Length: 181
Image 1 (cartoon, rainbow, N blue to C red):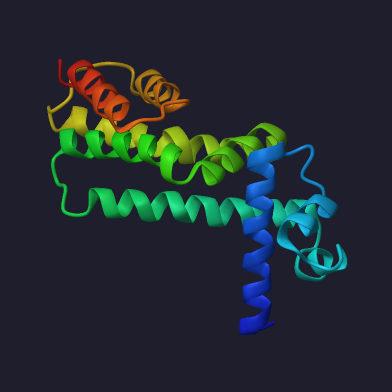
Image 2: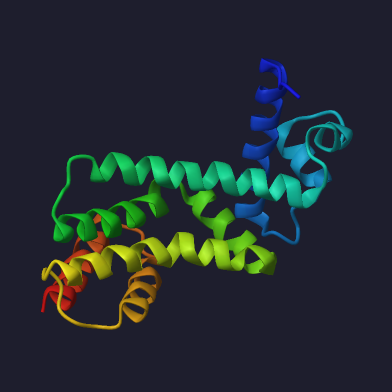
């Protein structure tokens, strides 16, 4: 089934409103009624028309939020080829997202906490690719020996709650010193 431009725009409007409601009120309070109110729509039937159920809507929110994170990461790491630069770029871009795209970051976390079936996918998104970069850095002899899963989780936890560029820079310096040895 092909989606029209109007339908795509409406889906985007609903997805953005859902993201903002989840970020502001939490997953549990993100009702269709609240999303409709936030989006300025006339009826909850508009959500039901565009999404099969709440899980379908949450998946759309996740896809959009993860897309935003990936775009920012790609832009930040464009042209960076060394592992230390990649680690710094990862940490600084993730901290920057907390400031520039807080609703998307909060929505990803809220959905992860409330939809256990998606937890493994979101854990891999959050920690898995960082662990793979750390592993590659170890193979190349750039990073010292350490448990990459523990380091990746520690880096991810260090990013949570950060809110300034200075914090991101300092956090990156800290983990680079720990990884390089």
